[in-house]
Image (cartoon, rainbow, N blue to C red; front, top):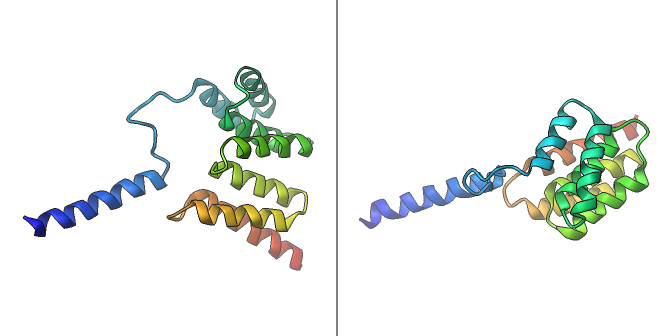
Length: 155
């Protein structure tokens, strides 16, 4: 019995950690936050103004929501002529509320690259390296962005 039980437990443990690493922590089909859903739909259409409007209203009602701050900053950053002070304020608010927010670490790192601050981007890459026990997309994406930034600087 032990010969079958241990390998089965190891397989189940590996599968469960892979699901967590992939971000599948929805709690068994819990409905997605409607604000996040609406904002993601606007972001998908590249309607940055629409996304910032949705998220700005949501932040007025729920200023302690790290996900709202993160997506708001993302939408501002992606829009035309982004106000980078506002972007950094909201990414930092997201990280103050949730220091382990992997998306906020990735996106603030990308924002630092936009303003030419490679050392700060690398700080957030190091944070993601600590947060991602298994490789995660946020670490991989920011690492790629840093490498591309460094390659452009060498030209």
